[in-house]
Length: 112
Length: 115
Image (cartoon, rainbow over the protein chains, first blue to last red):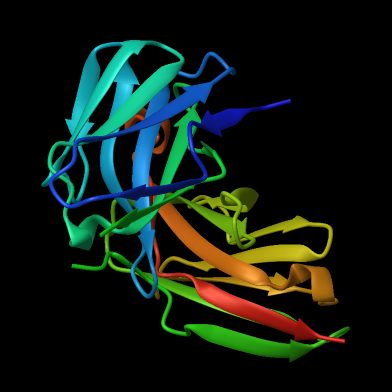
C-alpha cells in the first residue's frame, strides 16, 4: 500500500526558529512536493523535486528551502519561522510520467 | 493569479441527492484534471481524473465532466452519502506526464451531506 509519512502531525515553534519538516515515501517515486494549505486559498505549491538533489521552486517559495539527499526523503526548511508561516503543510509524491499524487497526513505548524 | 478556481466555498446536499461541484480554469495548456477529497486531519486522496481528450469519466458514484471550450469541469456524486462530506479540490496539470507531475489546485469546496 502506498505510504507517505510526515515527521510530525502538530508542531509549535517560536518566531525566528529554524524549522525542519520531514517527509518520507516508500513507493520509490521520483517526484516529491511540498504544499501549504490555508483556508480559502487551497493547496499552494512551495517546492518540488523530480530527482535526488534536484529541486524547483513552486508558486510560493519565499521563506522556505528544501533538501532531497535520498530518493525517499524530502525535507522542507523554514530558515527563520514567522507567524505568517502558520499553516497546514502537506507532502506528496508521484511516479515519473504520472500526475496522480499521493499525500501524507499533513503537519499543522503554529508559529508564535 | 488563480489559474484553477472553485467559486463555491461550500455546498450542502441531502443524502441520496446529487452533489455537483464545479471548477473553472484559465490556462489553455492544462490537459489533465483531477479531483481530490480531503477529510479533516488527513491528507487529500485521489478521487477521479479526466484527460482533455475526453469529456466524461465515470467511476461508480462519481462522474467528472469536462467542457474544454468553457474551460470548466464538474464532479457529480450520485447518490450523495454522509460519508462524502469532505473538502473537494480540483487540480490541473499541463503537458501530461512531462511536467514532473506538477499540479495546480483550486481553493476547495466543502461538501456537507445531511442524513
